[in-house]
Length: 191
Image 1 (spheres, rainbow, N blue to C red):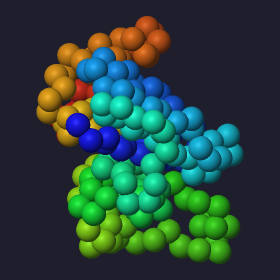
Image 2: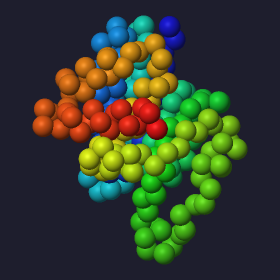
Image 3: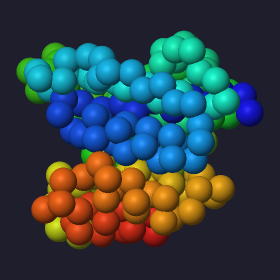
């Protein structure tokens, strides 16, 4: 199997670390060699962050170059658009439709771009966009948006059974948050 590449992108502390840890756990349990990068970016200041997850028979580096990502999992649609050049032609974007206003928009120096999902499609990306924040809220907490997104991502791995994902939640998520995260995963998967 060739190496496959997934980028998890977001803003600040939106949970990219837990999402990448959970995904890494699932892939390792399926027998893949997996490399997960540290979170890169301005996570403590609410800035853009990215984590790379690469897996295959043998992976030597966690870094994904431009044009190599098979999937971009995005916690915010402007972040998906920002990292679009890293996506392979015809690659898949899974994005939350939430809009987190960057500082230039907050200060009135710029406007939030319109029709981002359509623009990403026009650029050749396959885009799966949903209000995962609302899905997480239905599960019990907006803080579970990361796991709702992972639930949707799991649909793109038909070879990995749902029980493998659920076992990963059990292993990675602290016990007092497991039921909430199981609900968020299931709702994200079904949405």
